[in-house]
Every structure is written in structure tokens, then in C-alpha cells.
Length: 474
Ligand code: CAO
Image (cartoon, rainbow, N blue to C red; front, side, top):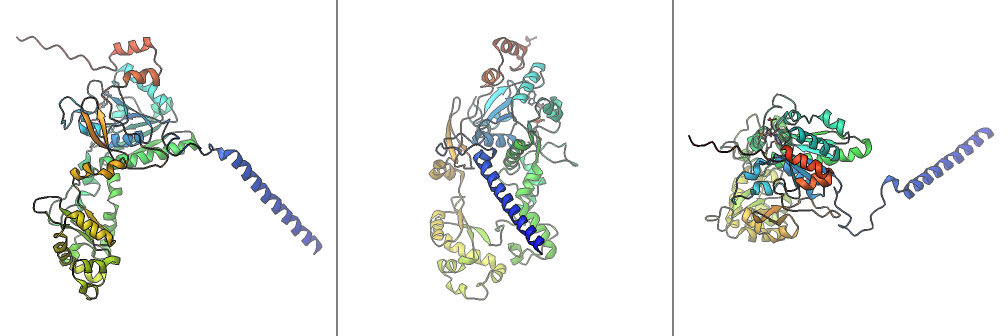
């Protein structure tokens, strides 16, 4: 008995000792900064930008890839855009509105970057690229499948030169039957399930104006890149990051895959098609302007709709504010009428309900409806035209819409960083001219000497080939 007591007391002492040890260790770790730097004492926003020090070798073109690298640049990364000498990103010359100047297509996707021209198929160009690979943290590309390999920049080659490099790609499709296909925005919208579920039931599939295939995938890629950089802190090595546009679109259209599965268990009661007594087929149908969630909504006309294509408002009959809606539209009796009082009772009558609400919204402008409804907590959204958005001062004030000045096209509006970080103000600058920073990058980033620079220039690796002299007329 006594020995048992003794053993118990001993183990108590040991437990206390080990607890003290743990506390001591934790205190020691804390004092040592836990392996992390001490919190900056600089005022918020003055301690550098989130991705400061990260160098991006930007091999992107058109929209999906440039969206990604522009965001990384806004976050403070040094984005070095590699372009073909004399030609550059094809979008520089597409949809041109100002003669001789880079198009808005290009300028609005390539802000805050530096541009270097390198012929990636030229022997000297390959040498420069290898040097850039050694120097940078991330390579981002969205060439057609196989193009990067054909340049000699295989993952194996890159990793031999720089095992820490993150190699990030946008492709149209992931591995599978379509992996070799070239893909543009609308192809992705169609293959990702968005087009078949957008539009009106009695019309053809529709693509949306929001670039969910290109810009949406660029956003996904940016998250993949920063995650890979974060993992690199632990592992010391980079990795491949792949975002397929089909996958990106599907990720954004996931509620429609949800509805596809719900169909097996009965009709989709929140779709107005249900209320109209039209049976469902085998696949998720197009739902017009039905609200995606469980709170029915529709787009309704407002005052002036006859002449203004955007005089509309999205109106949501959210259940908790049903009483307020009834009072507002002059139908207080609907609050207690069994046909209207509950959400399930309303579902088969949505068309009539929205027609009635529309009689009320048509008496006011969309902004008056917005103000009246918001005062009552009724969720509504005015249909804003791009003109209205461009002129909206609150978007300018938050830096979501930014005016920048460009040496050849003058002032233009661009979309700034939609992601706001409290300690990392966005860095929104104009897009670079083709090859504007070639010399600067070769000298300051890659450290080439004057002699080497002269050799590079003479080699033709960074300049467009001379145009052949016009043949003499016969
Ligand atoms: N120096 C020399 N050659 C260069 C170069 C440089 N700096 N930069 C690019 N090139 C070459 C490439 O090596 C490639 O040559 P090869 O075909 O001989 O290997 C060539 O330019 C064309 O590249 P590409 O095939 O990617 O371009 P494309 O205009 O034919 O296709 C696109 C465009 C977008 C359809 C295709 O790149 C693609 O499918 N990308 C992946 C999906 C994607 O991002 N789509 C979004 C596009 S935005 O709507």
C-alpha cells in the first residue's frame, strides 16, 4: 500500500516537472521569436508589400495567365514579362482603340509588370532564360500544351537549374481526352458546365460576360502559386501548379452540379420552371434570372426601362422580410393569405408575385428602389452599366477602379486589386511598353556586363529580326 502511495506521489512530481519543462520550452521558443521575425513596429501599410522579394518569370499571354501575374504584381511581386521581340503579347495589337498604342485589352491585364523581349528559340535567348530561371521564384505560363517543353523549358530542366522554382501553368483541360486542345474563354465556359446552365429555358446555351474561364482560372492559379510558395518555406523545393480552365469554371459553377444531383430526388422547387408546371429533364436546366439560392429572385423593370437597357433591379423575396415586401408593394393581405404567407406556398406563384412587385418597381428609378428597399433590409441590386461603374466614385475611392497614365495612349481606367490587404496597399501602375525594361533587367537583375550586353544585342536574341528589304519591282 505504502509503495503504491509512494509511486503515485513520484509520478505526480514527474508530471509537474514535465509540465514546467513544457512551459519553459514554450517561453524559450517565444523569446526566440518562434522562428519568425518579430512583429513589425512600422505603421500599417509601411512594412512593404505582401509579395515583396518574390520574382516572377512571366511567360503569360492573352488573358488567363496575365490576370494571375497582374494580381501577384499588385501584391508586390516583381513580375518580369517575357515577350517575343517585335511582336510581344498578341493582345497588344488586338481590339486597338488608339492608333499605334497598346490596346486596353493588353494594358488592363499587364499593369505593374516589367517587360523584357527575348526570343526563346534563339540559342542566346535560351541562355538568358536559364539565367532568369535561376534568379526567379516562380515561372508562370499559359502556352498551348507542349509549347514550353518545345522551348526546352521542361520541368526537369527548370528544376535542375533552380529546385526552388514554382512552375505554374494554365491549360484548357487537365489530363484526359482533351489535354492537347487549345482553349479560349468561351470554350472553357461551355466545357465547364456554365453555358448549359446559363440563359433562358426556351433559348440556346449562353456564355456570360464575366470572364470566368480566363480571369477565373487566373485567380485560381494565383492561389496555387502563393500556396506553393508557402509550402516551399518548409520543404525548400518548388513544385508544379496546374489550373485547367474547365476545372476553374466548374468550381465556379458548382451549385449547378449540386442541382444535377438533387434532380434525382425530385424537381428543383426553387426554379420558376417548377412553379410553371414544366417538368424537368435529365440535366440541370437553364434558369433564366432565378436566384441561385433558396431565396427566390428575379430581374424587374424600373422607371425608364423603355429607353434605358439597364433600368432594372434584381429583387430578392427573402423570407424574413416578406412582411415588409407585402406592405411596400401594397399587398398587406399576402402576409396572412395561406397562398402567399409561407415560402413553399409562394413557390408555384413566383411569376405572379414578381409581376406584382414589378408594378411597384416600375414607379421608381433603380436607385430609388435600392434606397427604399435597403432601408427595410430587403436585398436588391441595381443593374449597373459599365458606364455607371466607370463613373462610380466609391469604386475610385477604394482603388477598385484606378486611372493610370500611359506614355502612348494617355490616361485609361483599369481594375485595381479587388483583394484588399490592410498591411499591403496595392501597387497599381501602368502596363509596360514592349521591351521597356529589357536593358534594366539584363543589367540589374541578371548582372550582365557591358561586353556581354553588346554581344546579346548583336546576337538578335532580344531584338526583332530585320524586315527583309522590299523586292525590286520587276
Ligand atoms: N520567343 C519565341 N517564341 C515564342 C515566344 C518567345 N518569346 N513566346 C511564345 N513563343 C512561341 C511558342 O513557343 C509557340 O511556338 P510553338 O507552337 O512552335 O511551340 C508559339 O509562340 C505560339 O504559342 P501558343 O501555341 O501558346 O499560342 P497560340 O496563339 O497559337 O494559342 C492559346 C493561344 C491561348 C489558344 C494557347 O496558348 C492555349 O491554349 N493556352 C492555354 C489555355 C489558355 O490559357 N487559354 C486562355 C487564353 S485567353 O482567352
